[in-house]
Image 1: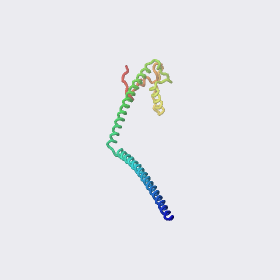
Image 2 (image 1 turned 45 degrees about the vertical axis):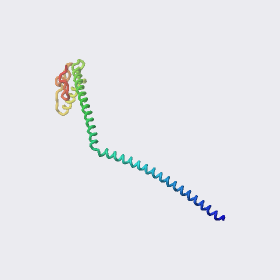
Image 3 (image 1 turned 90 degrees about the horizontal axis):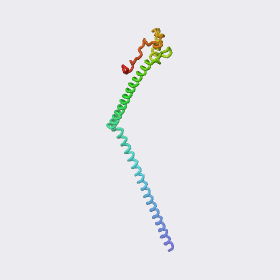
Image 4 (image 1 turned 135 degrees about the horizontal axis):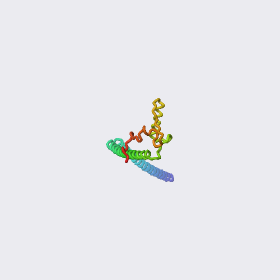
Length: 173
C-alpha cells in the first residue's frame, strides 16, 4: 500500500508541477502579449508621426497658391525697400551735389585759394593731367600761366565750375 500512496503523491507532485508550469507559461504569454501591445502602440505612434510629417511635407511642397502668395508678398516688401533706398540715395546725392557746389563756390571765391604752380584746384589738376597726357600723344595744347597771383594757371581757359556730370543747382545765391 505504500506503493499506492507513493504513486498518487508523485502524481500529485507531477500535477502541481504541471500546474505551476502552466501558470508560468500563461504569465509569460501575458507578459509577451503586453510587450507586443506596447511595441505595437509605439510603432503605431511612430507611424502616425511619420504620416503627419509626410503630410506636412506634401502640403509645403505642393501648395503652390500659398507658396506663390508668400513669394509675391516678399517681392513686394523687397521692392518697397529698394524704392525707399533709391529715394534716400537720390536725396543724399542731391544734398552732396549742393554741398559740393557750395564748397567749390567758397573755394574759388576766397582769397586764400590763390593758386601756385604746385597748388592747383582739383579740376585744374585734372585738366593739366589731361593736357599733359595729350602732349605725350603729340597733341600739344598751350598751358596758360598767369604771372598774376590772383589768377591761377588755366583759369581763363577752363571754366571755374563744371557740373556736367551731375545734377545741381544752376545758380548759387
